[in-house]
Each structure stands twice: as structure tokens, then as C-alpha cells.
Image (tube, rainbow, N blue to C red; front, side, top):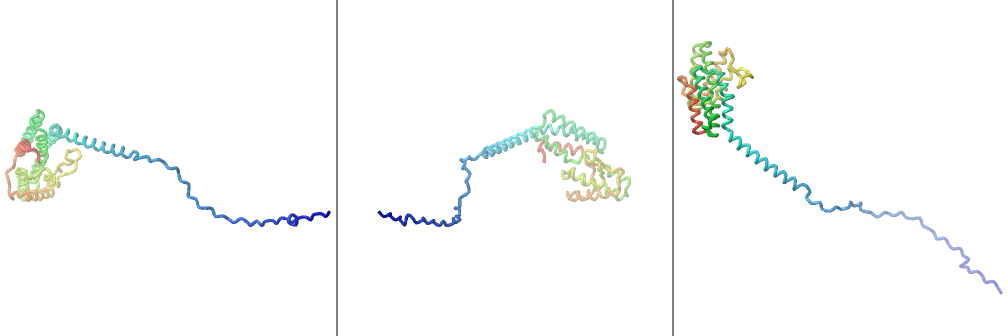
Length: 255
């Protein structure tokens, strides 16, 4: 019995499969990780902030309105304090003629007493105070000092012109056109700074003639502006002007 020949396929060594090197693979693009989504938080604190701001604005408006109303209700009290604590002491230190000074102080003191007794309404008290503050009562006495200095130290021509122009300036007050602000400007050349005085200045002593001439020029300009005739006027009485302005304040209030 002959040996069976081996199967040639079985005896054939298996061929090694060629393994090709791995090809580089391109990673597929991936989207960045997304944060976890949150739910809708709503409008947050904004409505509350807006509401609080609106309420604060309303409260401020109400407070300002109340404060204004309160101040208007105290106008008489304010006028009393101003006249008693500031205006009358300044009158006492003024350069008014002694008889004029006493008459004006007497009028203002009586006015304060009447305000304290409730004779005037708030609008009347405020109007009277405004009119008195606009009157050049303090400066009225300073004009006397300038006029006297011109008579004493200046030439007769300068003294005569000074007297005429200052009388025109007083006349402009008498007809109700010129105020204390105008007088302050006219008298500026003869003022020197003094922090101890209510107005922050006082008259220079002695008064320089050149400064007097400057005052006269300024007085002429104011009188011309108010169309006061270029002539001398008899001296107006300041106490009469004060009384007239008090009566006007009682009837019509302020300006």
C-alpha cells in the first residue's frame, strides 16, 4: 500500500499577507464643547431699579415743593430777621445826617414791629424788604461825605459840578429809577476794601480829589441815562423816599 502523498496545498506555507503601513488619518473636525445652556433668568433687577429711581424722583419733587411752600410761608419771618439783625445796624453806622438817620431808623423799627404783630401778609413783607434793599440809603450818606470833601479840598468849579451832579443822582432815586447798585458803581473810585464792613468796603479818608472827579463823571452818566435834567436840585429827603417805598410795598409788593 503506497503512502498517500501529502496535499501540496497543505504543505505550502501560508503566504504572509503584506501589511501596508497605516495611512495617517485626518481627524474629523469637531465643534468646541458648548457650555450647558441655562434657563431664561428674566429681566433681573432692572425693573426694581427703575421703579426705585422713579420713586426717589417723585419724593424729591414733593420735598422741593414742600420746602418752597414752607419758605414762602416764612417770608415775613425772614424779612423781620433781615431788617432787625442786618439793615438797622447798618443804618446806625451809616453817614446819613443825624436827623435823617434817626427818622429812617424809627420808620424801619416801626415796620419790624408791625410785621411781628402780623399786620402784613407774606407777599407784602417780601415786597417791602426788596424795595428797601434796592434803595441806596447807606450810599446816600456817603454822597454827603463826597460832596463835603469836594467843597473842602477841590476847586470851586469842581465843587460846584460835584454838588450839581450828585443832586441829579439823588433826583433819579426820588423818581424811582436808580438803585443801590447804581450808587455802588458811582462810588467805586472812593471805596477801599474793608472786610469788617457789611458791604466789604468803606470810604477812603481823606477822599482824593481825582477820585471825586471820577465819581462826578459816573454820576453824570447815570443821571443822563435816566434823563434827569442837567441842573441842580434841592436835596431830596431819604426818609420820605423810604416811607414812599414802604407804602408801595404794602400796596403792590415787590418789583
